[in-house]
Amino acid sequence: MRFTPALFKHAEVLLSELLRSPFPADLVVSRYFRQHRELGHADRGFVAESVYSVLRRKRSLSARCLDDVTSRRLLLASLACVQGMNRRELDAVLSEVEGKWLAQAKALRLEDLPPAIRLDLPDWLYETLKTQFDTQELESLVIGLNQSAPLDLRVNLLKADRELVLARLNADGLTAEPCRYSPLGIRLLGKPALSRHPLFLDGSFEVQDEGSQLLGFLLQPKRGEMVADFCAGAGGKTLLLGAMMRSQGRLYAFDVAEKRLAKLKPRLARSGLSNVHPVRIESENDIKIKRLAGKLDRVLVDAPCSGLGTLRRNPDLKWRQTPESVVELTAKQAAILRSASSLVKKGGRLVYATCSLLDAENEGVVSSFLSAHPEFVTLSAAEVLRRQAIEIDCDHYEGGLRLRLLPHRHGTDGFYSAVMERQ
Image 1 (cartoon, helix red, strand yellow):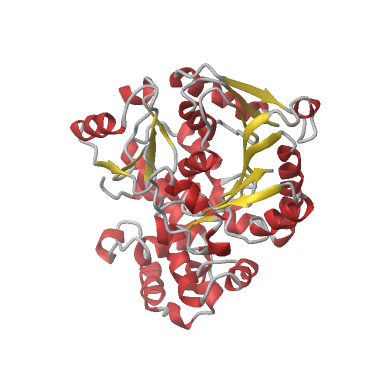
Image 2 (spheres, rainbow, N blue to C red; image 1 turned 60 degrees about the vertical axis):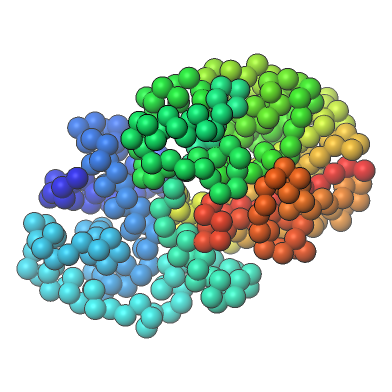
């Protein structure tokens, strides 16, 4: 892909939209590309990565802009200082004044900046994470979060096995390798277009981060059981659970959003599953939930959260979340976990998970729940995975009982999970 002034202009316009839009970045980017179908796959890749690079490094790039922080300068600073483009490559879009400024911007020493600015975090988030990680670990975590996420696939065992899919993808010129932990995971090099690949169209694989896949192995649903994905969304984990159940038993996909459940329908059709029952609920207290009280073998709660573990994919979230929004989320998470737990029968399993890094949304919610519900006891996440031949460093977090995944340690999105059983 050749860098051109036209491509730079697309990135500049899109970045301007992103910085003033109240909507999530992925929605704004998707809409822009629908409006500019003349952009090919490689062109879209360049534009998207350019604007996401700015969103990841916005505070330190703003410092490089000196007293004139504009979308254009942020983009130029990112291309030169983060993406490594040289002056000759940028000459086609640089004015003489910008050339002089860019030389100053590149000379700025990041180590002279305050830590929160250097690490590209809002002050409140830096202060919060500083209480959870030592200085070196926090630096490594931020470096991991500021990378672009890899593309992971999950093989659908109802349609194919991993070796077959790996062989086919590599034969088609894609560089694919097994994921490090998930027995169903495949990691691809780069971001190839897969929506028309025959194995995607026939349901042999779905796109799903490896960390998300591991939640299914923590729940460990069996054939013939009654299971619920309590916050199903578009159903990525629902499809995994259904395949693990070999399409036998009954699997409820609960969600409050009709739009999200609608996205599950075409995926469900490709998957070959016949045991999934999507159910829209009004809230966690819906009568449809109460009718199933004490009847389910396993319940997964992948709770709505700040999403701060997914900053590799959604870097705008760190600028959109606030301490106040986290407080609201923890109240919602507690209510959802309490309601979901009522579905679990004696001897049944409850898994709580978030893609957040914050203890308030993770161990804080689980500890409060366990204090109020002594009928639930904790199982070791590491041991549950080990019994399925999945060896993973649980970081001795909370005594090794919980699963905490971090991008710089595990190469996945940031995830937290607790496994509980009703006595």
